[in-house]
Length: 463
Image 1: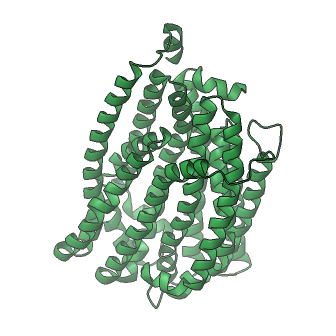
Image 2: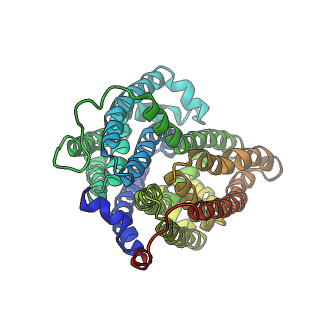
Image 3: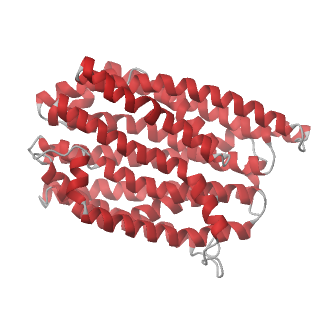
């Protein structure tokens, strides 16, 4: 087994988490910055306040694309980490071969179905007569790149899990930097309007897909495509989809939440309120993506050490990641409370939209500091292959808490009731997450008593 994989079970945990998380954080932050720059460019290049609301209603659709990538990518990455920890490279290669077919088939089906039902779906997600033309034009041009987006997302996770965190970081950087160059060029210089932003995204996805897939066709790399691995192995496919189902449903529920939120906002605040969601989403995305980068660095370490029975390393990795996540989202809460107007003005020109966004940011970020713990804990369960528990934790916030609040609070508090559903859901979900985590940690510790323990030398080496 390669040196890159061996260090997952031997190198000091703190240094190892930094090594795997830092490239992932850089990559995800670059992607977040791209999202921000893209929204700023669109908001200032097109002199119509409805364009911001039009982009807002495309977010749930793009979330579904991300969900499909997570369904395969997150499941494959977790399974690859665990089987490599068990020193079973052949199974890892079969996972690789099976997932390429799943990615293409699912991506094409999604693009085809959405193309047929585009207008009804966009209206369902909150498009008004004013914002629908912008949303439709953007989706018509960006839809062809959705299959490439799925492929890039799926296999970039596997690349990181198989011992190449630095190269996985470059994937995000290449796509984001290229997009940041092309989007302003197409909108300000060529004046292509909103389709220019979509075409820039398509080109960036093509380049990154070529970059990622070339890695797995290179036989010199730890894990690569080999003959005899493409025939569907249904037990493996089920295991990948089972693990990936948690992040998939998280994103699907996120899209459903966005639909409910957008329709509530349309009723209580109109297009200005929907535009405010763009500002809130783009702002918190920066901090969430940093936490996700930490989780991506944590995942192969936790999966490998769980597969090899090194529980001391597993717990140390989790607590370091959780503490880092809380620090990051706490920073987001503080900045959101102190500078909401500056944040809103980055994305908008219209004063009424800015005022609405300021109120949104002040309320929605009150409990945002808790989100870091939630995200890391959910990913911890996923890294252990406990998809059902990861799924429940994610859905508890969105389904059990947020949806009822979105239907109840606006009747009493109007638009502020919609915004208040976010922090209240965060508080309740954090309580549930902490309870489940405590129970699971005790269970793993009990199980470890019946398995081989690490030697004193190994434990000392973890510190």
